[in-house]
Length: 276
Length: 304
Image (tube, rainbow over all chains, first blue to last red; front, top):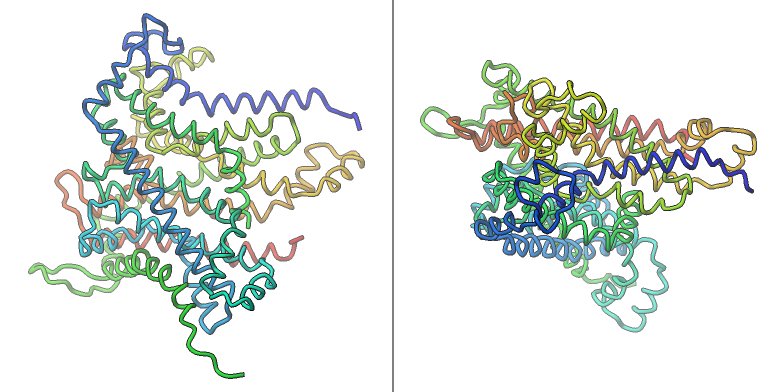
């Protein structure tokens, strides 16, 4: 059928281009100006940096006052640690809930799923007390454990609904061959890879970007995450445009690069997991 | 068949997740709720006071004014998201679902702000809106609206709407993605059939697409609700814990933070902090339950 409505299609493109510009404008403006000298930032904010206006002054300020590589490492350890622990614990629990019928199956499933809608932040008063009692304040462990607990409800929900769809024959065949239940759990993991990808995609960004728990549970210099480190730095250097723009650039560029590389998987994961 | 031995493997599978979830989520939440029913006497002893803290929060002179201010600000914050973020997100999703070339590129770009930290985004906008840099002045001049320029984040009347719009701008990718996923699942034949019958884009949307994505609209609404009544990072990062100017951008999250940790000369109060968290929990739970029981049940009649 060739009833293409050209003015309509053009309108759609124009609307989407306009919104795309709006979405990228602040990011581009920040990155563009991070490499220019102070005068040019103010006099020609939209100009590209050239040989005369190019400077790394902001990044040097950053390097001498804040330890961003260490902050990145902390964020990385916390995010990867929490995601790994969350997937391990959730997939084990999901396997049990999907595979066996036992007396408290529904009850435990319900108990775990309450946490899907209740934000863990509301328990902050209790979490801080607990962290003090366990002497975990200002450690990366407390962040990993809190994010793991926060992620478990949704992860168990998504993974168990996926595990229920696996064919029984496969597992029964393994049982006849004498495989233990633990071995069977291990064999099902590769089969639920798409669901694991979904859970990772949904959980990753909120953990990496969180400000609340690093601020409250691990504000020490040695345990600062990128977001907290950037937030403190931005607060101190409010009027030093070079330094502030450099800090913003450093926080934005790696995240956006990674996002563009993995955007297909990420978006597919978010939509397929969230719709379930 | 002989009775099988106790199924230890089930315990081994379930215990770690249940333990971490209980210790780091349920126990602190319950502990926090218990704390909200207690207070300290003059001598420093902890006593059970029932709902007294809640009553204090809602009615006493020192607490009620800031609490209700934060509450109504939060309602306004939520309203901006429901009235702008979700409809515009839906509109973008409908455009993206219309099988145009390069849809994936637009989708990827429009989702970019959503993956960035609120702190970073908030601060970037703060710079852009800062009169010292003059970006917002320049843009308004270009549109011939230069006389409208104001220090948007610095005025009591404009701070909260501005922050709400920044949040809308950042989070619009989420409703867009969810709506897009729902729209793509609508069978092409349905839409083609309507087109053949002479239906325009507007009719197709209201008669076919919109009724079929109603379940998603419910999910988006409840996610927005939970996210907004739990928000904190953006206001804290741009306006500080005092949610200025003069508490004009204070919402429940920042109010909770100040109550619990204290600010300036005011010491923190764990009992009242727990009480504020208790109220937030109540608000969020009532929203979720309303969705589960009222909205879900109504939908069951028209589910396809």
